[in-house]
Structure formats: structure tokens, C-alpha cells
Image 1: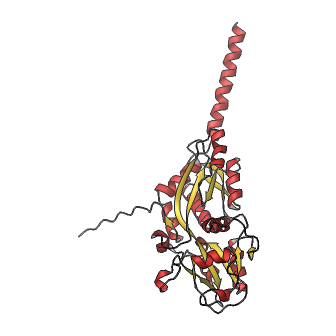
Image 2: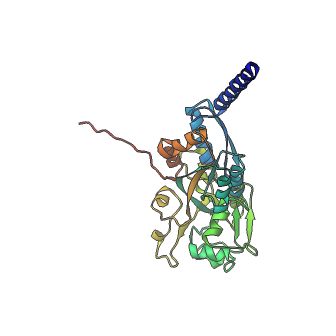
Image 3: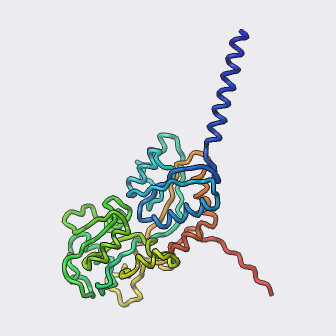
Length: 311
């Protein structure tokens, strides 16, 4: 009887020790290492956000991976990443994967982003309507000379970073396009390669995440924007003037004037108060929104600035 009691006691102590080690291994908002995955169109934003957070908390590390949005969400669902940056909430089927595993998860909208349309400087056409874009994607329009204004002729090549990325997915959903068969679409490996392709091919119309070219303080932004035109887009069928067109920059995103704006979310599968929750809180309720603002996007919760005026 005594031996049985001693054995139970030893097993109990061992179990407590294991649980203690497990708890110590869990990351916290200020310590630990997690994997984060994002669509490549948000690379400048995600790299700045995670880099700044690690600068504040040196004992944290984010392993940041960039994958097409559908693959990125799938990685989070199968626990290959803790957080995903994406442009949409989970579908019912995707949410069911977390529900089956009894994972509550968290979805936080952090910003309003936009898909920027770019052409080379050789193309003088800097304006386009949503109706014209829809016609390009449903095959009714095929050539530059069919668009209003501009000097370019020949077939329009629509250029995206990836066939499964957030940019093409968002545009196809916007125009309710079910098939791209017969449409002149080309894909590159990244948003930067889209920029390079458009710069070298005057008949190309590129689609990129606006945060690649919207940070006025970044040397990279100036370098990438060189020899490019960012098109103004109008949701009116018959615009009456330049005032009806908007570019995808901060004010137009915040006032919801730019037609190709979209939300930006962080989705977490974190089951404890860890590093993922720390990053989300930093973005949603702390100074992280200043980084979003600096990059030219519109933060969902702008940072509250308090100004004291003394006589």
C-alpha cells in the first residue's frame, strides 16, 4: 500500500513538472517565437510591423513567410502558422476547421488597403473607370485604343503577382468574374516583379498592393515608383471630370472614395495569451496604427493623439 502511494506521489510530481515546463515553453506577448504568414502584397507592411514589435520586445521573434492568400490561410488552419494577414474573414468551411478543434481564434480588421493600378510612363492614359475594368475582365474590351484617352495601342496585358494571390482574387470577386479563360492575364512572382514588368512593357496594366508604393518616407518607395503612373479610378460610368477619379492613397481610402479599396485583417488561431495576441493588441489598440498610417493605409483604429496647449 505504501509503495503504491509513493508511486502515485512520484507520478504526480512528474506530471506537475511536465505541465510547468509546458507553461514555461508557451510564448507571451513580450517573449517567444511564432510563425506569421501573409500574402506577398502586404510584405512592406508586415515586415515593418513585426520588425518594430521585435524592436520594442527584443525577446520576441517572428518567422515571417509570404505565400498566396489561399495558401496562407490554409497554413494557419493546419497550424503551420499562428497568424495570417489577409483581405477577408474565414469562410464557413474554413471556420469549421477551427471549430472542430475547439479553437476560438480571433479576427481583427486592422486597416483599409487598396489595389493600385499601374502603367509605365510611356502610357499617357492615367484614368480608368470601373466599367472599363469590368469589360477588360469579361472580355468585352481587349485593346488600349478601346479605352478613353491615352496614346497606347494594342492588346492590354493584365499583370498580377500570383494566380492565387489576394490581388487577383479581390479583383475577380469585385467584378464577379468566374473564369479568366480567354483573358490576357500574366502573373509574376511578386509585386516587385509586377512593377518591373510594367516598367518594361508599355501595354501592361499592373495590379499591386498599394503599400508597395505609398510610404513617402521610404527610399524603396521612390525607387519602385520611378517611371510609373498610378491610375485614378472612377466608379461612375460617365465621369464628368478629374474630380470623379481617385487614386489609392490614404485620404481616398479613409473616405471610401477609391473603388478598389479592401479591408486588411489579422486572423489568429492562438489558444492562449501569447505573442500573436500581443501583436494584434499593438496594432488594434496601441501605436502600431501609426505604422499603418505611415505606410499610407487607413488604420481601423487611428492612434489617439493627445495635445496639451498651454498659454
